[in-house]
Amino acid sequence: MLFYNLFSKEAKIEKGITEQPIVDLVDSLLIIAIEYSVSDIHLEQTQDELKVRYRIDGILYDQNPVNQDYGESIISRLKILSGLDIAQKRMPQDGKILVSFIKDSSGQDNKIDMRISTFPTIYGEKMVIRILDKEQNKIDLNCLGMPSEVLTSLYNLIDRPYGFFLLTGPTGSGKTTTLYSILSYLNNGEKNIVTMEDPVEYNIDGIIQSQINEKAGFTFEKGLRSILRQDPDVIMIGEIRDKVTAKIAIESALTGHLVFSTLHTNDTVSAINRLIDMGVEPFLVNAALTGVLSQRLVRKLCTNCMQQDIITIQEKEFIKNKNINLDKFNLDKINRPCGCASCYDLGYKGRIGIFELLKVDDNIRDFVAKKATESQIKEFLISQNMQFLQGSALKLVEAGVISLEEFFKAISL
Image 1: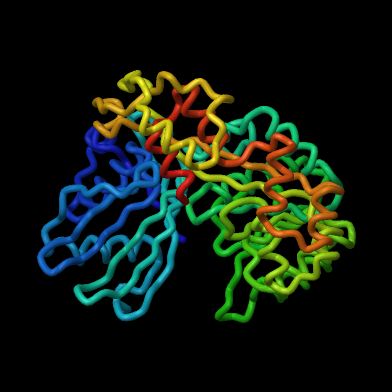
Image 2: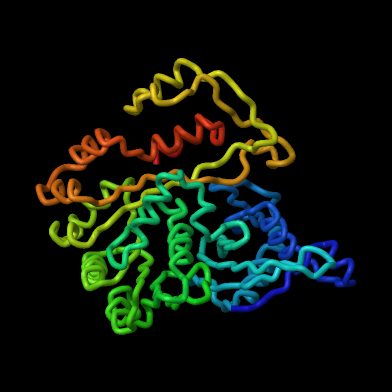
């Protein structure tokens, strides 16, 4: 991994730095992305040009394309910076750049990790740059936007000395940020915290982090068995992918460790059935699982230009058809996106999480032991006034934080 100083235009002028066109183009691509809080840069070679797209708040936006004459040089420049083989164009490659972004002549900078991934296509290589900026993604549970009641319950669950806690949601829903926030909270110097990740996204001082290397034979399964000989108090597994990993994780929880991991399911209740479908016996799930947190990321309305409007009858009917009781919400007036210079005419600026927390208590364990269906468990949880993802999102609509369009998008995932 190469360390690269990235200067803004004014800082370059101040320091008298002159660059070649390709270096300037690459620097401009990265600087604009950082300033716009872009999470991913897509560089795709077509027949005539290098297509550039920025992912902002989960959505890809086209940028000005680059002439094909410069396209390959830009890809090569980024491959050199990330330590990749510039001669290898037929196989995918992965690399990293640690960028020091010098904003101005004062010399103050921000350390940013960039993950580089290449993929061969019929017109050349496509490159995706994942930007991991700790300043933008606060690794702090209190900064994730969780409702106070969810945050309080979460603290109670993760303060336990042992147990198995899962985070669920689709790719890009913020699970990793929440996991790191939990580990940062637990990282008080009194615990041995060990992780197994694929890949490591943020480096956290005081935590032992390891990265899976399947080519070398270092898999989640082998790594987990070795971790248990490292005297851990807290174990974080990047993802539960199969029955073997799930069983070792549960066995670790049962032998006095606090274990965290992620699972790709739509909600909290379906995570229980997913473990059972993987081949984990229900009695083991009951013995180890303490809680499940499901989440999504939704775009926040730009506070500078959002406009208040009256909700339509059709929109209310659509919400009712999702089995949501509107009597609990005041939705006569809602905010809608508009667009201004502050949000780059998108109408949205930044994202916030919606959350659904399931505490596995004796009632849930009884349902699992009886092999109850998901709908039966959900009916019981509704009777207990548990807040699901839909309710969490609708509260943000009611508060004017997100639009109704974002609500509909979130509940359809």
